[in-house]
Length: 281
Image 1 (cartoon, rainbow, N blue to C red):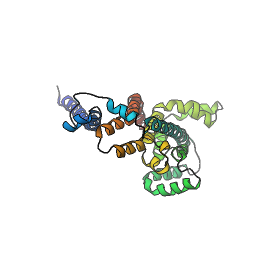
Image 2 (tube, helix red, strand yellow; image 1 turned 135 degrees about the vertical axis):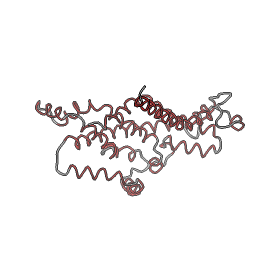
Image 3 (cartoon, one colour; image 1 turned 60 degrees about the horizontal axis):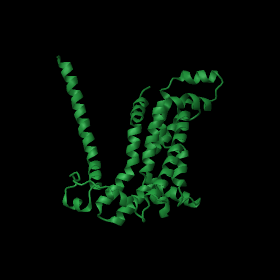
Image 4 (cartoon, helix red, strand yellow; image 1 turned 45 degrees about the vertical axis):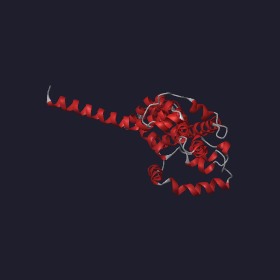
């Protein structure tokens, strides 16, 4: 075995070791959360947080789901409405805008794209108060509109950039052939470009879904009524009501994170493929 082969094998095992250590590191907090959620209050007080429960109990989950003060079903419904609507709006807005920047030629396109990228440098705190004042003047505060409608207007600079890079990697001959056949740009977008962009669109959809599902600041600012709150707000409310009952808090945390875990296992293949293919020309 030559030195090059040994070096390649050592590099491969070193990378695998780093990935394994990183995966374990990121999994430790979730392991602690699940372990604490499956313990009774007495066992939680007498054992280490690292220890797996001796007598696994799902009573904590039943208590969380049946709590009359914080309706998990209602919070789940509100979160689902906001998440699915905003994700659809993001996918619609960013796919259309990215197509225009990637495949169309118009005056000032590059300058507009640079301005769009520059908005990524602005902290969200700068636009928080002006946005609230604007929504208050049109009477959208305490409604779901501020959390849904903006997604239809572009879908975010990062998502547009991601899809634009993917669109630019598709052969121009596809557009030219469709134009010769008499297709409009809208037809090319719907029937040629979009069907080829599955991995990239899935990646944007996963990002958008996770961001909207885990959003805490937006609902905290715009939703005042208890019956309009989302899971993240409900989780904070539940924590304030239960104080140091960590077994119940951990159970509610696991329930909130379950949809994201399911989404990860379903979409991880498309997510990785979309990220990889976005960087290819």
